[in-house]
Image (cartoon, helix red, strand yellow):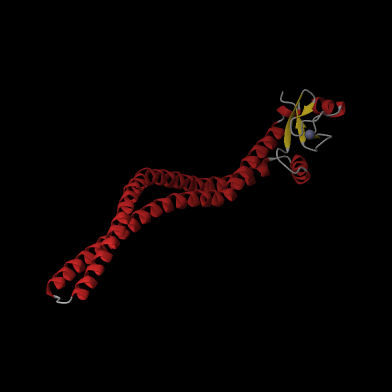
Length: 238
Ligand SMILES: [Zn+2]
Protein backbone atom coordinates (compact mmCIF):
# COMPACT_ATOMS: atom_id res chain seq x y z
CA UNK A 1 0.00 0.00 0.00
CA UNK A 2 1.24 3.37 -1.05
CA UNK A 3 -0.16 5.02 2.06
CA UNK A 4 2.23 3.10 4.26
CA UNK A 5 5.21 3.81 2.04
CA UNK A 6 7.72 5.99 3.93
CA UNK A 7 8.20 8.11 0.80
CA UNK A 8 4.49 8.73 0.58
CA UNK A 9 4.35 9.59 4.27
CA UNK A 10 7.04 12.20 3.65
CA UNK A 11 4.92 13.67 0.89
CA UNK A 12 1.93 13.78 3.24
CA UNK A 13 4.08 15.57 5.79
CA UNK A 14 5.13 18.11 3.18
CA UNK A 15 1.50 18.57 2.23
CA UNK A 16 0.38 19.24 5.80
CA UNK A 17 3.22 21.73 6.30
CA UNK A 18 2.40 23.45 3.03
CA UNK A 19 -1.21 23.79 4.07
CA UNK A 20 -0.31 25.16 7.48
CA UNK A 21 2.06 27.61 5.79
CA UNK A 22 -0.59 28.79 3.35
CA UNK A 23 -3.07 29.26 6.18
CA UNK A 24 -0.55 31.31 8.14
CA UNK A 25 0.32 33.47 5.15
CA UNK A 26 -3.34 34.14 4.53
CA UNK A 27 -3.88 34.96 8.19
CA UNK A 28 -0.94 37.36 8.15
CA UNK A 29 -2.27 39.06 5.03
CA UNK A 30 -5.64 39.52 6.75
CA UNK A 31 -4.13 40.75 10.02
CA UNK A 32 -3.53 44.44 9.14
CA UNK A 33 -7.13 44.75 7.91
CA UNK A 34 -8.38 43.03 11.02
CA UNK A 35 -6.37 45.43 13.21
CA UNK A 36 -7.65 48.41 11.21
CA UNK A 37 -11.23 47.29 11.77
CA UNK A 38 -10.54 46.95 15.50
CA UNK A 39 -8.94 50.42 15.58
CA UNK A 40 -11.94 51.89 13.80
CA UNK A 41 -14.32 50.39 16.33
CA UNK A 42 -12.18 51.72 19.19
CA UNK A 43 -12.13 55.18 17.60
CA UNK A 44 -15.94 55.17 17.26
CA UNK A 45 -16.33 54.33 20.94
CA UNK A 46 -13.80 56.96 21.99
CA UNK A 47 -15.52 59.51 19.78
CA UNK A 48 -18.84 58.83 21.48
CA UNK A 49 -17.26 59.59 24.86
CA UNK A 50 -15.76 62.81 23.49
CA UNK A 51 -19.08 63.85 21.98
CA UNK A 52 -20.95 63.22 25.23
CA UNK A 53 -18.38 65.27 27.18
CA UNK A 54 -18.44 68.06 24.60
CA UNK A 55 -22.25 68.20 24.73
CA UNK A 56 -22.17 68.48 28.50
CA UNK A 57 -19.47 71.17 28.44
CA UNK A 58 -21.36 73.12 25.81
CA UNK A 59 -24.55 73.14 27.91
CA UNK A 60 -22.58 74.24 30.98
CA UNK A 61 -21.16 77.16 29.06
CA UNK A 62 -24.64 78.09 27.75
CA UNK A 63 -25.81 78.12 31.36
CA UNK A 64 -22.89 80.34 32.42
CA UNK A 65 -23.62 82.81 29.63
CA UNK A 66 -27.28 83.01 30.59
CA UNK A 67 -26.32 83.43 34.25
CA UNK A 68 -24.06 86.38 33.43
CA UNK A 69 -26.61 88.02 31.17
CA UNK A 70 -29.35 87.76 33.80
CA UNK A 71 -27.00 89.17 36.42
CA UNK A 72 -26.01 92.14 34.28
CA UNK A 73 -29.67 92.91 33.46
CA UNK A 74 -30.48 92.86 37.18
CA UNK A 75 -27.61 95.29 37.82
CA UNK A 76 -28.89 97.55 35.08
CA UNK A 77 -32.37 97.47 36.60
CA UNK A 78 -30.96 98.49 39.99
CA UNK A 79 -29.06 101.31 38.34
CA UNK A 80 -32.13 102.57 36.48
CA UNK A 81 -34.20 102.42 39.66
CA UNK A 82 -31.67 104.72 41.32
CA UNK A 83 -31.86 107.10 38.39
CA UNK A 84 -35.64 107.11 38.68
CA UNK A 85 -35.18 108.64 42.13
CA UNK A 86 -33.16 111.48 40.63
CA UNK A 87 -35.13 112.43 37.53
CA UNK A 88 -37.51 115.35 37.69
CA UNK A 89 -39.61 114.98 34.58
CA UNK A 90 -42.43 112.49 34.37
CA UNK A 91 -41.51 111.44 30.76
CA UNK A 92 -37.99 110.60 31.86
CA UNK A 93 -39.31 108.56 34.77
CA UNK A 94 -41.71 106.73 32.43
CA UNK A 95 -38.95 106.03 29.90
CA UNK A 96 -36.86 104.40 32.64
CA UNK A 97 -39.91 102.49 33.82
CA UNK A 98 -40.40 101.14 30.28
CA UNK A 99 -36.77 100.17 30.05
CA UNK A 100 -36.99 98.35 33.38
CA UNK A 101 -40.09 96.41 32.41
CA UNK A 102 -38.44 95.52 29.11
CA UNK A 103 -35.43 94.19 31.00
CA UNK A 104 -37.64 92.24 33.40
CA UNK A 105 -39.44 90.45 30.58
CA UNK A 106 -36.10 89.60 28.95
CA UNK A 107 -34.87 88.24 32.27
CA UNK A 108 -37.97 86.07 32.50
CA UNK A 109 -37.31 84.68 29.01
CA UNK A 110 -33.72 83.93 29.87
CA UNK A 111 -34.64 82.32 33.16
CA UNK A 112 -37.01 79.98 31.33
CA UNK A 113 -34.27 79.21 28.86
CA UNK A 114 -31.92 78.55 31.74
CA UNK A 115 -34.33 76.04 33.31
CA UNK A 116 -34.39 74.09 30.05
CA UNK A 117 -30.60 74.17 29.82
CA UNK A 118 -30.28 72.96 33.42
CA UNK A 119 -32.59 70.01 32.70
CA UNK A 120 -30.51 69.16 29.64
CA UNK A 121 -27.36 69.41 31.75
CA UNK A 122 -28.70 66.74 34.11
CA UNK A 123 -29.27 64.38 31.16
CA UNK A 124 -25.98 65.25 29.51
CA UNK A 125 -24.04 64.74 32.72
CA UNK A 126 -25.59 61.32 33.20
CA UNK A 127 -24.88 60.36 29.59
CA UNK A 128 -21.30 61.58 29.83
CA UNK A 129 -20.71 59.73 33.09
CA UNK A 130 -22.10 56.50 31.66
CA UNK A 131 -20.00 57.02 28.55
CA UNK A 132 -16.86 57.65 30.54
CA UNK A 133 -17.47 54.64 32.75
CA UNK A 134 -18.87 51.87 30.60
CA UNK A 135 -17.44 52.92 27.26
CA UNK A 136 -13.98 53.58 28.65
CA UNK A 137 -14.07 50.13 30.16
CA UNK A 138 -15.13 48.66 26.82
CA UNK A 139 -12.48 50.64 24.99
CA UNK A 140 -9.85 49.26 27.37
CA UNK A 141 -11.09 45.72 26.69
CA UNK A 142 -11.10 46.28 22.95
CA UNK A 143 -7.61 47.75 23.11
CA UNK A 144 -6.42 44.71 25.03
CA UNK A 145 -7.92 42.35 22.46
CA UNK A 146 -6.34 44.36 19.69
CA UNK A 147 -2.92 44.20 21.33
CA UNK A 148 -3.29 40.46 21.87
CA UNK A 149 -4.20 39.99 18.24
CA UNK A 150 -1.21 42.06 17.16
CA UNK A 151 1.23 40.13 19.32
CA UNK A 152 -0.25 36.83 18.14
CA UNK A 153 0.44 38.12 14.64
CA UNK A 154 4.08 38.63 15.58
CA UNK A 155 4.28 35.06 16.85
CA UNK A 156 2.68 33.85 13.63
CA UNK A 157 5.30 35.69 11.61
CA UNK A 158 8.06 33.84 13.42
CA UNK A 159 6.21 30.55 13.03
CA UNK A 160 5.75 31.21 9.32
CA UNK A 161 9.46 31.81 8.84
CA UNK A 162 10.33 28.64 10.76
CA UNK A 163 7.83 26.65 8.77
CA UNK A 164 9.27 27.94 5.52
CA UNK A 165 12.65 26.53 6.48
CA UNK A 166 11.07 23.25 7.58
CA UNK A 167 9.27 22.97 4.24
CA UNK A 168 12.52 23.46 2.35
CA UNK A 169 14.09 20.70 4.43
CA UNK A 170 11.09 18.39 3.99
CA UNK A 171 11.15 18.86 0.22
CA UNK A 172 14.73 17.56 0.13
CA UNK A 173 13.52 14.30 1.73
CA UNK A 174 10.67 13.65 -0.67
CA UNK A 175 11.22 11.21 -3.49
CA UNK A 176 11.85 13.37 -6.64
CA UNK A 177 9.15 11.87 -8.87
CA UNK A 178 6.59 12.23 -6.04
CA UNK A 179 7.67 15.81 -5.55
CA UNK A 180 7.36 16.58 -9.26
CA UNK A 181 3.80 15.21 -9.35
CA UNK A 182 2.92 17.06 -6.17
CA UNK A 183 4.23 20.37 -7.53
CA UNK A 184 2.31 19.85 -10.75
CA UNK A 185 -0.90 19.16 -8.82
CA UNK A 186 -0.35 22.32 -6.77
CA UNK A 187 -0.35 24.28 -10.00
CA UNK A 188 -3.52 22.75 -11.49
CA UNK A 189 -5.65 22.55 -8.37
CA UNK A 190 -6.98 25.98 -7.55
CA UNK A 191 -7.59 25.39 -3.86
CA UNK A 192 -5.98 23.19 -1.22
CA UNK A 193 -5.94 20.37 -0.25
CA UNK A 194 -3.68 18.97 -2.96
CA UNK A 195 -3.87 15.46 -1.51
CA UNK A 196 -7.10 13.85 -0.40
CA UNK A 197 -8.11 10.46 0.96
CA UNK A 198 -10.78 8.48 -0.85
CA UNK A 199 -13.90 7.68 1.16
CA UNK A 200 -16.77 5.58 -0.21
CA UNK A 201 -15.15 5.79 -3.64
CA UNK A 202 -15.39 9.60 -3.40
CA UNK A 203 -12.45 11.98 -3.52
CA UNK A 204 -12.68 14.04 -0.31
CA UNK A 205 -11.01 16.95 -2.13
CA UNK A 206 -13.76 17.50 -4.72
CA UNK A 207 -16.44 15.22 -3.23
CA UNK A 208 -17.00 13.53 -6.59
CA UNK A 209 -17.00 9.84 -7.33
CA UNK A 210 -13.75 8.51 -8.73
CA UNK A 211 -13.55 5.76 -11.36
CA UNK A 212 -12.86 2.11 -10.54
CA UNK A 213 -9.51 2.51 -12.27
CA UNK A 214 -8.52 5.17 -9.79
CA UNK A 215 -9.61 3.03 -6.86
CA UNK A 216 -7.75 -0.04 -8.06
CA UNK A 217 -4.67 2.02 -8.82
CA UNK A 218 -4.72 3.45 -5.33
CA UNK A 219 -5.23 0.05 -3.74
CA UNK A 220 -2.93 -2.04 -5.87
CA UNK A 221 -0.20 -0.08 -7.52
CA UNK A 222 2.60 1.58 -5.71
CA UNK A 223 2.48 4.79 -7.64
CA UNK A 224 0.91 8.16 -7.17
CA UNK A 225 -2.69 8.32 -8.36
CA UNK A 226 -4.68 11.44 -9.13
CA UNK A 227 -8.42 11.98 -8.88
CA UNK A 228 -9.88 11.75 -12.38
CA UNK A 229 -12.27 14.59 -11.51
CA UNK A 230 -10.11 17.26 -9.89
CA UNK A 231 -6.54 16.09 -10.33
CA UNK A 232 -5.73 15.92 -6.61
CA UNK A 233 -3.43 13.15 -5.39
CA UNK A 234 -5.70 10.53 -3.86
CA UNK A 235 -4.97 7.69 -1.46
CA UNK A 236 -6.67 5.30 0.93
CA UNK A 237 -5.76 5.59 4.58
CA UNK A 238 -4.74 2.02 5.35
ZN1 LIG B 1 -11.17 14.95 -6.69
